[in-house]
Length: 313
Image (cartoon, rainbow, N blue to C red; front, top):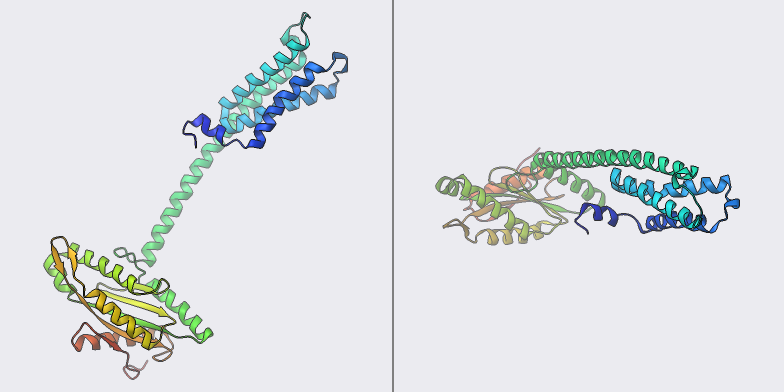
């Protein structure tokens, strides 16, 4: 695409309009040269006048005032040449032809008027596009603040609950299952206290990336608190969730390099499933949370499946 502004506008003039521009100059020229003076009628004059205005409108729209000026010069030049050729050998004054004055004056008025209007409209359009882009950016920022964790860019608790309610509604209608995994990092506090909050933030980002690699694209990994994560697994039963939990535990055990330090954290996981452990999201999350604490009390770095008698809501 041309970088020069003039050629940029030329580039964006549709091919069909170039045909119109060419014919708008060629037809008056051809007719003027080849039509005897005694056959020139009022209809002919008005037709030539109208046709000659088309390039002015087109150039003024695409190029503004400058385009209108160029079109005025081209129109008058074509008209002059046509009349000059038509009157070879005769004594005539170009500016004494009424049609010449009419076309010239109209082209000047339309060329500058429409050109100026087109420039103003284009400026307004540009300003509006910038305002809309800024508004959309602000809207996206507000949406991200409302529904995503600013550190890891994972869904937050609010967005998780929204997704979970949708999955629950679908599962009830389709008679399918889903599971919830509640995770808490083991040893995160020690890393945070020893290496500082910046190192802790880098650790959480790395853990987030590893968690997403352990699950499918349609599974939901969310960060709901400092070092607490929750995973929603649509269509996954208890047995399948256990295999995923084992994969998560193995993946998170790998050392994480932060600056010049290599740190290791593990995770404790609690698992609950619909409809076996409840038919409401609040109950399923609570049971997975309790199962996670049972995993911590039993030595950490492992998982526990929710006990159906653990709570009664």
